[in-house]
Each structure stands twice: as C-alpha cells, then as structure tokens.
Image 1 (cartoon, rainbow over the protein chains, first blue to last red):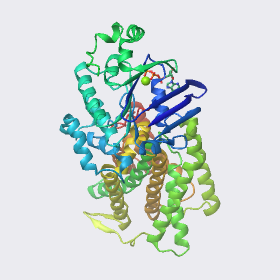
Image 2: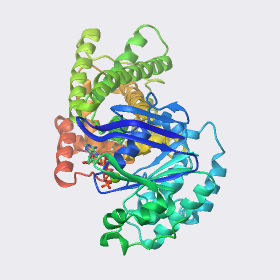
Image 3: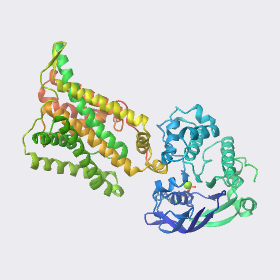
Image 4: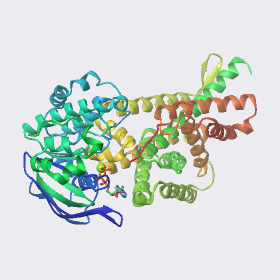
Length: 247
Length: 292
Ligand SMILES: Nc1ncnc2c1ncn2[C@@H]1O[C@H](COP(=O)(O)OP(=O)(O)OP(=O)(O)O)[C@@H](O)[C@H]1O
Ligand SMILES: [Mg+2]
C-alpha cells in the first residue's frame, strides 16, 4: 500500500532521515518508536508531503507521491494527524470536522453521514459540537484530531503521538477506538514514544534511532526483546500507562 | 457646538469611518492569511478611486465604473501577491512587508504619471441634493457609503461563518500547515485574501471619491487611517477593524468640531500611538496567531 525506498529528507542543509526503506501492507498497523529527535515526526511529514524528500521514492497505492503537493496526497486518502493535534482552536468542533472533510467536498460520502459516524465513535464531541476546539480538554482535543482526520475518509492514517499528555484511561479509550478502526480495515502508521501501548496495538514495530531504522520486527517479538525493554519500557513510561493486552 | 452641529459631525464621522473600516478590513484580510501588513493598502483605495474616474472620463456609466475599478484593483492586488509576496515566502514576513512598501511607491508614481498631480472627482452615485435629518443634512452619497459598507461587512461575515471556503480561510489564519493537511490550498487562500482585500479597498475608494476627491497621493493618508483603525480594533480581528474604523471616523470628526480642522489627520496618528503604548492588542483584542 505504501512503499518507501531509500528516503532521505531534512530541513535546509541538515539531513534528518538517512535513507529509509519501509513497506506497509493494507490493513496493517505499523508503529515507529524512538527517542526524542530520532526523526519520527519528520518521517510522517515527509510521507504526507509537508517535508520534501531530498532523495529516494515514496509510492502510495502504486502511484509516486513525488509530484503531488500536500493537498494531492491528502485527497488520495493518506491523512496525517500531526503531533500536538494542531486543531483550529477558535473554530467550533463541528467546523473543525467540516474542514476535515474539505478534501472530499465534491466527492465522497455526504457530510451529515460522516458527522454522524465520527460522533458515534466519539459521543463526547457531539455534546460539544458548538464549543471552540481550543477550549476542549486534552483528551477531547485528541479525539477531535482523530475525528477530523477520519472525515477525510483515509485509507492510510498517520498518527503522531496520539497519547501525548493524556491520562492513561483516556489513552486506553482512544487506542480501543483505533483498534476498532483498524479491524474495519483502516491501515495506520503510529508514531509513539510509549512503546508498550504502541506495540500492543500494532502488528509490526520499528525502532528508530537518529534517522535510521535500528530494529524491526513483529510487535510481539519486540515487546519481548530485552534491548527494547531496557530502553523503551524504562522507569519513565512503564509505570505511567497501563498497557493493553498484546494482540 | 449645538445639537445640529454635533449631528453633522457625527454624520461626517460615520462617512469617513466607513472608509476607514473598509481599509482596515483590507489590512486585516491580508494580515490574517499571511502575517503581512500590506503597506500599499491605502494606494489600493486610491487606485480604486482613480480607476473609476478614468472609466467615467471615457463615458462609462457610474455603476460600471464601480465594477471596473474593483476588477482592476483585484487584478493589481493579485499581481502584487504574485510579484512581491509569493517569491519572498522563504525570506520571511519582514522581506514581504518591505516589498509592499516598495509597491506603494510604485503605485503612487504610476498614478502620478497616468493622472497627474491634481485632485479629481467623480459625480455622486445619485445626485447631490442634501437630505435633512433632525436639523442636520446629509448628502445622498453618505447613505451610499454607509449602506454599501454595511452590505460588505454583513456579506463578509456570512462568507466567513457559513461557507466552507470561508471556514478554510479562517483555518489558514490559525494554522497554515494544519490547514494544508486538511487538503486546503494555502496558496489559493493567500491569493484569494489579496483579491478580496483589493476588491474592498477599491470599493472604498470609488465610494469616497465623490465626497472628498482623489489624487495620486491620497493613498498614504488613507492607508495610515486604515492601519490606525485596524490596530485600534486589534490587528487581525475583522469585527474590531470595522469598529475601529467607525470609532476613528467619529473621534476625528468630533475633534475637528471641538479643536480645529487643522488637527484632523493628526488625530489618527495620536490614536495609533496611544493604542500601541497603552493597549497594543487593540480595543477588542488582537487575534493571537501562533505559527508552527
Ligand atoms: N522545522 C525544523 N527545522 C529544522 N530542524 C528540525 C525541524 N523539525 C525538526 N527538526 C530537527 O529534526 C530532528 C528530528 O526531529 P523530529 O521532530 O522528526 O523528531 P521526533 O522523533 O519526532 O521527536 P519527538 O519524539 O520529540 O517528537 C531533530 O533534530 C529536530 O531538531
Ligand atoms: Mg515528533
């Protein structure tokens, strides 16, 4: 579904991604874990077109993304939920959702139908549909960020640290919804610092270090990998979030 | 000052205030989309008036002069975006602002070469016969100015609140990169904002020319007044821009009545400085724009 070959990218003259290869199959959840500054967000931004790759190729559903702008990429169903949610704070919850569907304004399912669908996934949002997005709680904001992305009818969803700054119980709820979405066929690339919860949802995991993939494997294998355990289930996070059962 | 005189000053304040409000809106639209303060905004107003005068001189009916001037200035404003703003995108906002300062000189000089130095007028839209209101009088053009300003402001409000593209423009003002991730074309929004800002400025220029004449050099002062109004209302806040325009117009008119007509233009400048010193976010609060 998505194929990266020798992808290099960076900012100005600084190269952040040093030649990455990645294949994501339909229906898969691939998680990318790694320390701060490893280049996880840069990788997602490169896939979604916000950062232009300086080398290599990216193919989505058999089509090269090189000549498509950000808008062209979104309209093909490759949708990113950026780090830190990036909602339109002064706009209402429902206006944020309408803008999520902007790219499908002429084709795709009717707006009302999609709104009803995302409200059924996140009933809290429906209660607050007239509220300014910037005044929502952190958890509600993350729900809105996911819902807004779903309004674009993605076939591949890129999530950048959806658990960031949220209480464990909220994280569990959100990840349960993500799991349901995946069961219905939505493919995802999930960037997380919280390796345990990420690997509990994902089929496959990749450990990223300084712009390179250091380790790749089945989620289950990585969860049991002593090196991963030592580094990523360290004291800092392990006690913090109760992980879901690995699948 | 008796009541009739007071009313007369208020009428004149509301008339000029409408023009300041529209000019301030022009500043606001461009600022919200790009963070740029377009220093050639006043020259757009001037070009609107001058172009309408030129069309009228060629025997075109007034309504078509209005329309023609709006179209011409829209094209000029979009040209400004293409030539002076877009190529400097990577150089940062300051370079773009300086480019608009340069553009203001270009527009002014071009207008001087085309139309010369004298102030020119346009006939009023529907006659000159004053209408009596509670002892004071207004010329019909005043009603046109205020009426059309209200129509423009209401139409804009509906556009920004109701239409999907209007919401997309607001989204770009909040967070351009997130807007792009929704498939909104930021470039289109910027170009559109320049076009709309040009249209509104041109309309203001055409409407005021029958009352206060227009010359190649009128733009600078109109720009200053519009900028003062936008700052007064809180830069980036469209409702504030309109309110700021009317407040400035009325304060200015009353200042003329109480102090002296000689100080009229200084009042905008004093208000601008006071706002910047005392309440830089303006009366209604600037939109705090954070960019990623
Ligand atoms: N806009 C930018 N301009 C210049 N350098 C950047 C920019 N964004 C990120 N970088 C640099 O690129 C490197 C990778 O950053 P990136 O945001 O991709 O890391 P990350 O893995 O997502 O980290 P985190 O877990 O903290 O979100 C860092 O060294 C960072 O300083
Ligand atoms: Mg990141």
